[in-house]
Amino acid sequence: MTQETWTAVDKYLNDVYTPADSALDAALRASDAAGLPPINVAPTQGKLLHLLARTINARRILEIGTLGGYSTIWLARALPQDGKLISLEADAKHAEVARNNIANAGLDDKVEVRLGKALETLPTLQAENAGPFDFVFIDADKQSNVEYFDWAVRLSHPGSLIVVDNVVRNGGVVDAASNDPSVQGTRRFHAAMANDSRVAASALQTVGAKGYDGLMIALVIRN
Ligand code: SAH
Ligand code: DHB
Ligand code: MG
Image (cartoon, rainbow, N blue to C red; front, side, top):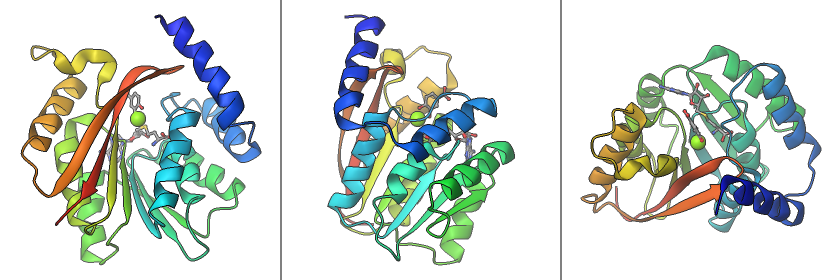
């Protein structure tokens, strides 16, 4: 099986499960026009995040890593009328593009994009009592995933879901000698998960138009 097959199958599935959507399609076009890298989640993954958040009736969602707000829009659409999503983004240009895309999707009343390095903005969220969050999506720099996951557990409650993107890294995750910091960060993350009794978790490999990677899903048991 090759990338060509994965891309063709992704397109086939997208046609069924994620048909054209003006706000999401516009968000990707605007992100591309602004020069943002095309590293948003795939459509079927965005919809999976949306379905998971809806399944648990999430009212408060935290996202770490906004980019152009593509996954943000999928997640915010799962919220009830009075729901709230806070998304953390370190890059000012990404945050600006995201805010425009979110407003264009009619979601600016529910979504706040916070500019700053997540390891600096997460303590602020705690100081503000912004939590607890019902759903957390971690998708920023992979080097800090251990710290982000720890914050996610602390800012959530038993029954919350935490999803971490990019936990396989084209298979690089099995290479203990890798000098890719994102691979090393991901390996540290999985090692920490092996000993984290606060959550029940699993991880899946994924393929598609965006290549070969994976998702981790954790249910918070205690925090
Ligand atoms: N969740 C998005 C993709 C995020 S890409 C989607 O699926 O649509 C990763 C994002 O994390 C980038 O925008 C990058 O600027 C941001 N990022 C990287 N390091 C960060 C940090 N330390 N704090 C917050 N955001 C960071
Ligand atoms: C990268 C980051 C992501 O969040 C992603 O989904 C794919 C790639 C990256 O930094 O390369
Ligand atoms: Mg990602």
